Length: 146
Image 1 (cartoon, rainbow, N blue to C red):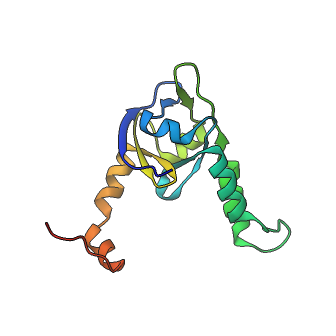
Image 2 (cartoon, rainbow, N blue to C red):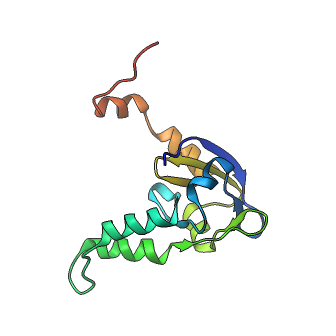
């Protein structure tokens, strides 16, 4: 599975969105939605979420000092497996909408193994804040000129 691309859509008055068709099949039934970096939401296929979260937090001791415990609490307490309704919509919990600053316009992007949901305003701010030339240079790879 390799998710790429971008779609624009809207949240309805009841906090529901349609997952774009280009992402829906890859996410499968009951995807996992949780908080992501930079105030976006991450959506993973159920099996991928279980595998990633198990790998990331395997061995976290709830009784010892471990900074992963704080991250684990946030990701699990702010995440949920969601189901599509008969019209193909998923309902996003209000705490996730608040974290993502999502009010109406939503941008969905494919990022390799997940879909990220962004408030259109937050996405535009993010896009305007990055300098791709600096990023390519820091990676040691510059895009080839045509």
